Image (cartoon, rainbow, N blue to C red; front, side):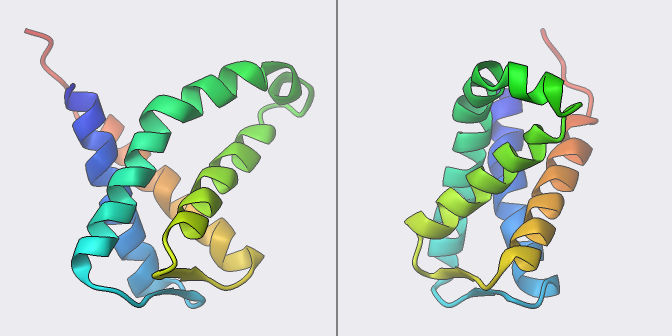
Length: 116
């Protein structure tokens, strides 16, 4: 449960960081839509992404893990499609946003979690 909450926080924080620091990423709505988009991104990363990784395991093995980047890009792109307030213009801003999402999720995953 704590891991899921961290994924939600990572989704919101990474979209906010991408909006502030990546040119070509704009969020034109209210903050509640940014939080909603981040929650959806965190939910996709927590529930759907592991299934996609399992299904595409042969492709990830053949490409030495690089297909995992395609999965990450697809999840960010899905959130971009679902939320018209989030505007990502081009492939480079999409890639940079994906890297921010990965980095924030990785850093939040390093926080020790009690399993008591």
